[in-house]
Image (cartoon, rainbow, N blue to C red; front, side, top):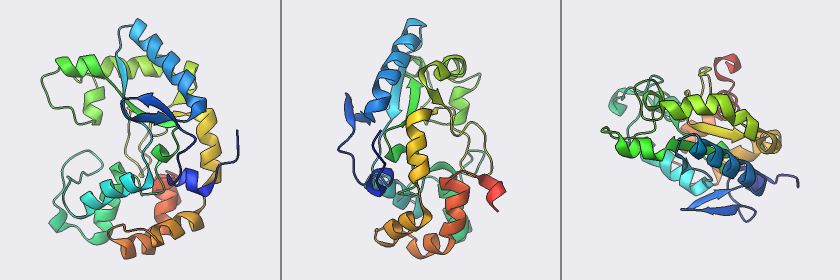
Length: 229
């Protein structure tokens, strides 16, 4: 595999990605393993489909900015809605980063990480699908998928990078990473590079982000959680 450039891990350059249909793009080293995993799941009665794959820097910034402006719901670490008017800027920043990555710091920038769901099960479900943890638990439409992934995803080179809430990113049973490929991107990350990208971006709350960025980088981007404090 070629060395990973800053523009690639920041989500600012994606010419290397492969179009896998329906608006989804993956790293070329991930495509075959994903397709084989999907086929195996379907044979076992699980309609494994992509919710999200590659997401560029600007798209991640748009998600962040909507939450900063109060145009999208903020959640606590247990998935309960928060009232933005009661939060300081720093509290709001932590609430956002618990569920949505910092632009430049998302694993979705690489084409190695995916969010998946059981499309058929969700279509037959009577609730609104929001990609939350309860939907992958016993009463949720994606419970069978979650169990199948636990048993089989490793055979195809995938694992859950957010299996456990360490006090950084919330638990995400739907988020899979292609370990061998993602490792190259993980090793390429640098605080000074993402700092420069944030300084030159149109992110909301920039001053607050930059003030706390060294700690945020450790806690959320590297997902070291409370251990980084």
